[in-house]
Length: 153
Image 1 (tube, helix red, strand yellow):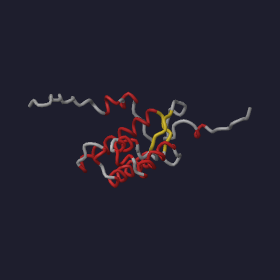
Image 2: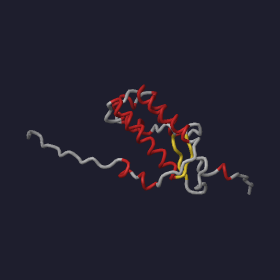
Image 3: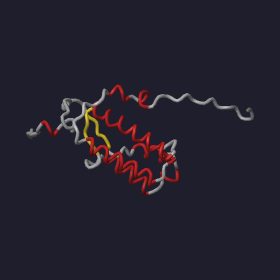
Image 4: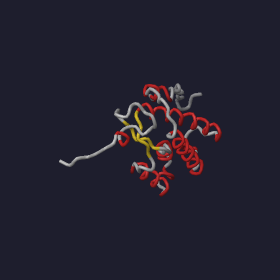
């Protein structure tokens, strides 16, 4: 059996100063492309474009230049940071959904998220409890509107 020599800094969370090096990790996409993959995927015209297919292919490739390996605490922390940046960007552009973005606006937001991640990765931070990042906590349920029956007001 071959011998593999690894240094502790080569495994686990890559965030500087992380105390959870040996815990489970997640591959975090710096530019958070999944929001536009999902949003633009609902638009049949955009979903058929080379640009969209290229975005999906690059995302699925998990290219080391596009990802960070993070423990669940740091993965939660960066997503909470992203949530605030995304909320501000949606308000600035008056967008209700990612499907409403143009490609230029989507690229600008993804680049902003990538830069934020790059700068954040230089700092020692404590991380956030992954329980703070459940879908229910990050995106509280909005009460569904009752649908009217056809023909009634």
